[in-house]
Length: 175
Image (tube, rainbow, N blue to C red; front, side, top):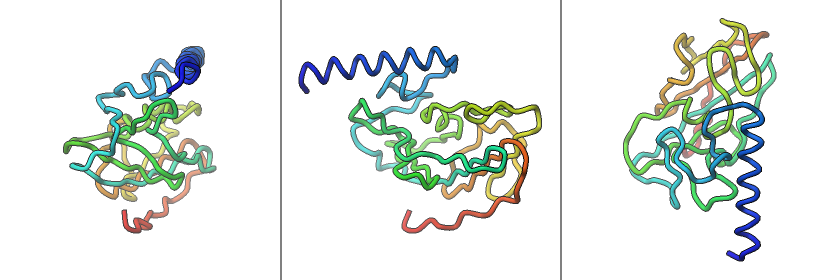
């Protein structure tokens, strides 16, 4: 890596940290410190091969889809890949870890750099009770951050009305 690239990477990383702090998020996020562990999840040079499962996440803000972007957990400024990540913008989360463990939706949201609580999804703040959560088609009434990322879990977050009946995700392909 050239000296220019190293300097540019440091400036870009510092700028991302300043912008995150100015936004007042307060949470450790992948873009704040590229490649550093987040919520106990490391960013390794290769995908883990011991534990490999997939989930699907759909997020709606007042009835409109909020896409889960490609490359969550794949920091631009680091040559690594977090154990929880996306490859494409289809909502499929990949868990590819070097050991079997329990991972949560909260960990994924922290890597994504988005807020998640009973009263906030991303930048959308909600009154109490306005977040409707479904896991595998069933209502979930606990802390959304604690939803476990189980094999083929189908997670739907509806942040505010209008509320829709979740459509089951079935396009697992060769996942």
